[in-house]
Length: 291
Length: 101
Image (tube, rainbow over all chains, first blue to last red; front, side, top):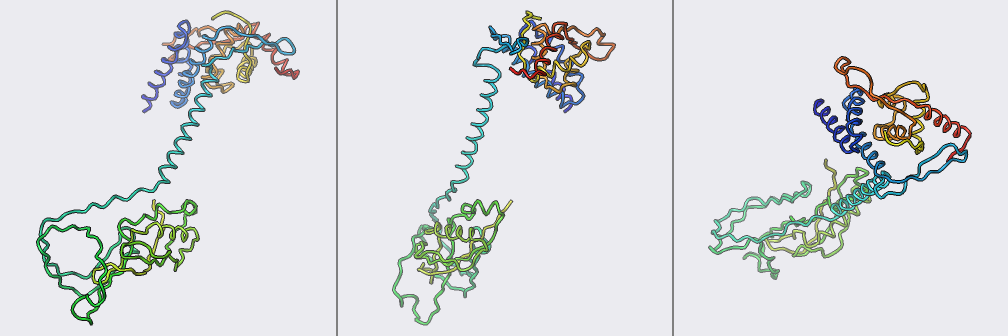
């Protein structure tokens, strides 16, 4: 590492000296290498070499500058050289560099803002056709898991239901919701219990991270709000969500309401005997910061 | 080096370089010595030294050592000329009188 640093410094000084006018380059190379040798630390030598590069630019510009105007002091004894304006003067180059850096930083900030403010679109669901016949299924206790919150997990243990085998026909997994049927047509016995599975958030429900308030992020606010939502058979809200339990932060509560509204159409409806129905149920929305 | 014009662009860094030579006008200083005295970075220091030499305020020569015996390369040494001493003194005198241009 030290040898690399040393070699880099020497190469920089030699290259810098070669960019100066031909009458000076040999002398400056020897002079700068000798003065760099007097520096003790590798970092100091590297800084010296970079400075020599800058010096070579300044020396080259001064040699190209033609004509000077002379100004005198009020005392008449301190003459000054006023260089004619040059497009490539050191000040113009420095000003250009500073302006470019500011523009680059501004552009970077704008791009970052655009990227982070736009919520990512969930992947579209693709229907999949299964050609194989489905075997008879003895349904286990229904266990419903949500996509991203353990707190959303609802476990309903129901008695096993014997399902008849389905005919051997291609089946589309993402079937449309069944039309509501009139009461009394479910099963053969009017006394049979209705198997009701409470709805919740669907797999395409918006992610809370996209609705996390910036102020809450900065203040490291976390918490979970419980809302009551009424959802129809298609997973759409039928009424405005109502908060039933605060997260402890007004900002997070408002964000939870906003998220619940945005999720309309992405809820999983409550089902009764497998058929989606309109129903109201609580959902818990947790905002938590992760590293 | 170059033509002696006697005109030098005055800046704060130029004044600091001149001041380091004026501490002892008979001293012969290398660029490294001047850097140690006035802490000006190499990117600014060497153009100033060349400018002062070009104006005839400084003269330079190679250090008369044997690099292999000394174990280090020879340095370029600068010293004030009589003209440089006179003009630099005038510059500082004018500033002391509060004449700023």
